[in-house]
Length: 182
Image 1: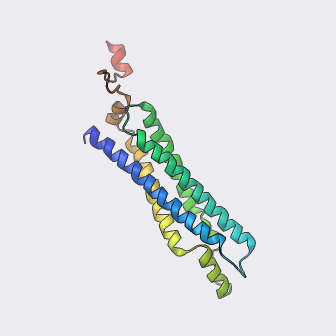
Image 2 (image 1 turned 45 degrees about the vertical axis):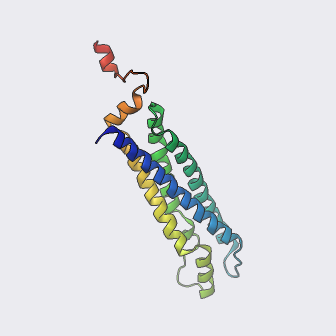
């Protein structure tokens, strides 16, 4: 695969992950707004606070991640070794944060046991809508997979040379082995 094709693949993967995080942040903000207007009769205030805290965590990770990935999208095509290091650092860390948000999401605070009254189950369902779980889960999982892919893909040798070469100066990157053997 040609290097310019690889760079385009990395660029579009990072851009897609950023778009997925924007989607995740938007739906989380929507559900959080709806939660503020929710009036409950049987649901405990502690459960409601836990759901709200989990939504805030998801919103924070998605929003900060989207901003980081948008910035990374702007520089991913530059010939700079710091870009490659950023791919290695941001990708796995943000991917792990997204997966932690999926595993410990708001649905656990209101998971019905089957023995509660029907009204309480309905309040749980309004606090954590099923459509949110699907959108948040798919967007977060796909974004995490793309970030892990980009971090692993950036280890390729030809991408190493791409990010280490001085573009525009006419000089190409020479490894320390090449420099010491001449």
